[in-house]
Amino acid sequence: MSGRLCFDSGGPCPYDARAMGNPLRDRRTAAEFASVGQVIEFVEKIGSFAGLAAIVEADLAALEPARIPSAWRGTEVSGRLQFGFVDAAGLVPIVSGCATARIDAVCQRCLEPFQLEISTEPKLLLLDAEQLVEGYDEFEVWELDTPAFRPQDIVEELLIMAMPYSAMHDRMAECKAFSPAKAPDAGVVTELKRPFADLRSQMTQNESDPD
Image (tube, rainbow, N blue to C red; front, side):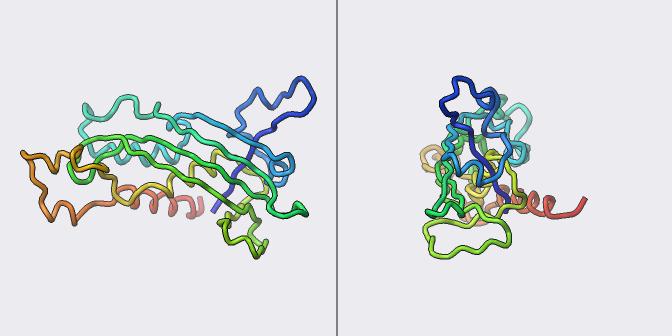
């Protein structure tokens, strides 16, 4: 796994140059973010997350071009991240919060486009690869590949992991596969494709392969 970052909340100084940038894309160490208890509240577009956008685009490619939602890259990703230390000694950085996205997807029952909500509520221990910590079972271990990271990368990976194996309408009434004109076929429902799962696996493989 790879890690991510947090924002400079500023101090008594009347001007903080960091605030002019986008804290979600700032690159710092976990200890730097945690030491000031930094918080990032964000509202971004799907198009700002390259990996997430690539998965959505590949899924929508199953549709005829005229049926692909024209504004899918502009749908919002929003949430909040807060950094700190889990221990009194300030040796183990953590990040917690939430992130939600509404993405355009293709229902694997009726093959129609619809909007799918995905969300995550991380509680992560931000550890170096060799670092071992015990006694914090309520947190998930997130190994950092490099000392410095961007919070955007954490948000993106968590949302990708939150994607379902097969995107489908939550309610049957919204799914055309269950309309009177098109009764569901048992084979269609049980022999579903898993495009999100396949795309996630492919992206993970590509990231692990050497250049």
